[in-house]
Amino acid sequence: MVSPAYATCTFIGTLSSSTIAQGTSSVTVSGTDGCQDPGQIVNVYLEAGTCGSGGSTLFSSTATIGGSFDFSQSIPTSSLGPGSYCVRLTSCQAEPDCGGLATITDPLTVTAAIPEYPLGLPLLAIFMVIAYGLVRRRTSATKN
Image 1 (cartoon, rainbow, N blue to C red):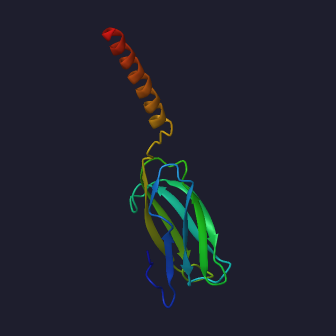
Image 2 (cartoon, rainbow, N blue to C red):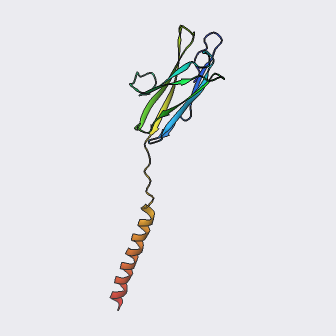
Image 3 (cartoon, rainbow, N blue to C red):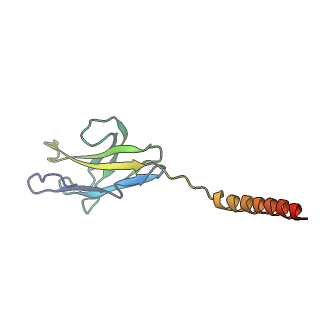
């Protein structure tokens, strides 16, 4: 999402994925902040609930703006349950006194993990072979 431009600067941030499966280790938020000098910071927050709902902060960190006005921050998500979350970025817009605070919000959805049963089909095949053998044995015993 793009923040409104203050004077001649632009503040842009995006998530690596807006929908992840439960148990995914992290998502990355990256972007550019042309409103601050390299070496300054962008604040990164992960909040419970939909964006704008005022949910509690689950994670907070800072990302340092690089020489090309770019930034990137990994957000841990492995402990999140299914539901809606919000990634919020804030940046000062008039250094050095932070005359305005630009905010970007990106929704994040965590879906329920689909369990995998790697032994399910082989076990089913083994039980079917055993059942077939028992049925065949009983039917051949009754014919004799």
